[in-house]
Length: 85
Image (cartoon, rainbow, N blue to C red):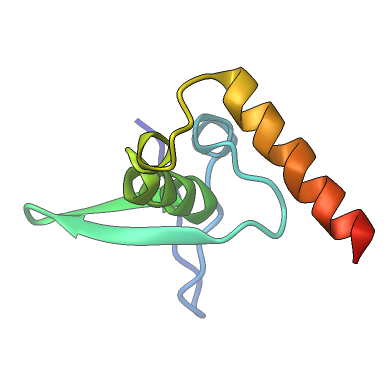
């Protein structure tokens, strides 16, 4: 269990062990979530990435991308189109 003190301005310093676990660095944004009467602090970048991954789930298959080789071919194709422009 980690402890932090609230300043007169409502600020806290996140203990180093918690920062390490959340992979937080200077300038990162944190997200406060309420779940079942508890407040959860999270690395906002990781939450955004997870939500994006969930939103994109199954999209590769819909586009006919079945393997890493398919993805690499698509990237080459797009790069070629961009060079021609």
